[in-house]
Figure 1: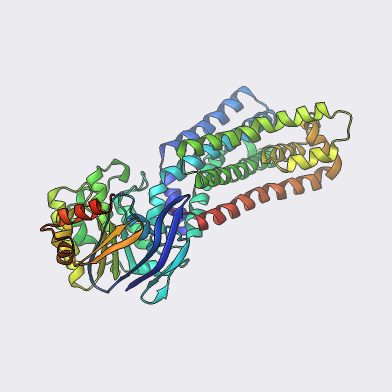
Figure 2: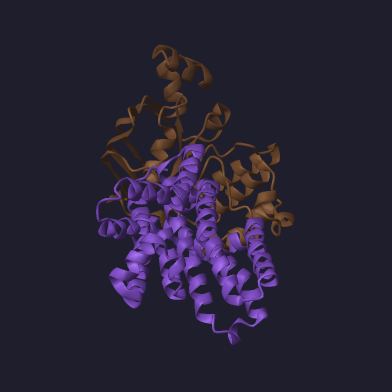
Length: 235
Length: 260
């Protein structure tokens, strides 16, 4: 599905991605883990074309994507924190995004699932952080794209919404979508991840299942496994 | 591009600031006409206000809007849209909504006063047109600065300085140069220097149009002398349009290479 070879990205003097090689199979939930500043967001943004890599290549379905834009029709991206135009209403934002890309199919289900009906006519600037995040999720899951990229999707959600989000992710997985999630919440990873990618200093440190990581680090739970990796590498 | 423009435009015309800007011009128009029974005098007063104020508001709005929609731009960038179209759409959205506030805000009082029956009608409309062009110029410059500087305070500060430079400092430097190099023929230099300031260009353009040589000033006089009224107007209009074209191309150039 995604094949990344020798990706380099530098911001000023700071090397964020340092010859990263990575490939994801089609289907399943892949989580991207790593300490702060390990390059998770930069990696995601490179795939989306938001960040322009210094060198290297990114292929999606065996097609080179750097500098192109049409391929983004195949990707739903949910940013970490969503800020929307203050004066637009929620419903107008939905219509706008639907106007910008094709393939929207389950808007109503999402609106009722997150109980967004009372907010549809409210201006986005007046929504609370959690409600904005729900709108953000709705926009992302509205489209039937084969690849989903979620950057810290659980931020600011209440337990009910969180549960609903997890169900949504599972549903999308069952219909064969490929889902990339970057997160710091280990319980979420243990619950849903089919594969873990652990980033360290701009390179892939580990790629495999949760159990493989536990075996490799000789730890019983994921949190300790991650902590032991970080201690070993003096991060 | 037009979709982004449309939504940006609707977002903006509903913002409080667009109304304040609109109401400001509306009351300015009425007050001017109330104090100045003579329409042609009101037009000249208006000229002096417009060539300073539209660049200032364009600059402030351009920077503010970019920084405010920074995260939203990220969301748009992750949609299947060309980068160029996002930024051009936003740029034209801001410029158009500001120009509209100006044209409608001033248009209402002058139309109510009977500008259509007056001989000043063409002068008045060229004044509005110049206000709109200046808005497009300075929104573009501000947008470039905002794109270049992630640090909001830096971007904001530089945008204000750039306005101050074109509106005030440029003329001051120019006068000092004229005084210091009094003994040399500076006509050509004066002409050349005017090209690099859209505010000067529009002042000359409108004064040539109004045919008030007393207010032309040094550069204006040289301009009229060198090009004549007709060609001078054509020349300055072309330059003003280039002052939109080049900044817009710069916006495209920078946005293509920028990381978000």
